[in-house]
Length: 336
Image (tube, rainbow, N blue to C red; front, side):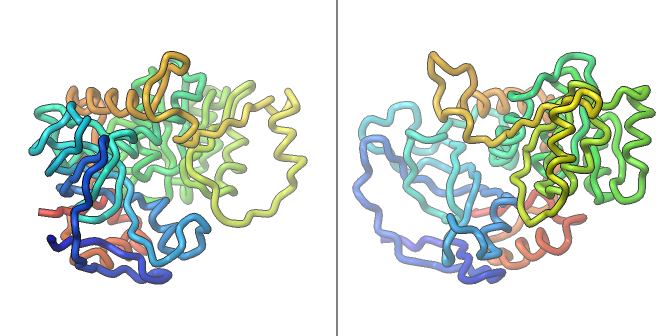
């Protein structure tokens, strides 16, 4: 028996750090016992859980999203990792976990900075927007929302060959986007976004817009600066009620005079977990590509890390992400 530290959402907006007895069950054929090294908070998903309003996340619950861990013990049939290896996986904010290798469970390449590894999931979420897009070399792409996922989507769009315009309300996130190489940045509350985008694109508008805020009104407003036969990609999960003239919105899609814009969804689960012969893209393939981009310093993660915090600071971490978005962005828990 050992002690297992974990984070719990006990009730809406209330975060607790608990310590429980942990009795290791007999490991299944494809199961591995791991010990967390770093885990990353997903601001969108986890703050939605913490609100207590998500049907799929009934409180109390142990949250979590993406982690890098040390392998402690492996079940029979697990041959690609061994005790002592560092692995990337999805999982909870719990120090010890039994994880299935049938899910996203990948040995971390040598020389990859371990603090960067949990950001792989944010990057693969962002990757979905590029995978479903028609972005080509020479295109101009705009991104609303420069948090973790939006920033990484902007970086990936640049790697696809596009010139990228990032838009946010946070001066700090705009500054971070500059550090990560985003070509143009606009302040959504101060700049005349439509006019400036038309100036950048010589009046043509962007060919692809990636909406990463999840705020429905932002997606609607962005339709005005998308060029003819362009596309809008909904990367951030839309949340919150929004009332508008649906006919007017649909005409942006239907009428050539309004742009004949294609609407696309970019939910990460549209791709299978493992590669297979019938589908080119998968979560595992995208994760391995992200590792390679990080190793070659083509995908910039270090500027996204705003805090590395201890487990005991969990309430402070979530409160910061909820109420101080300028200063809190990429928040890691250090489990050492």
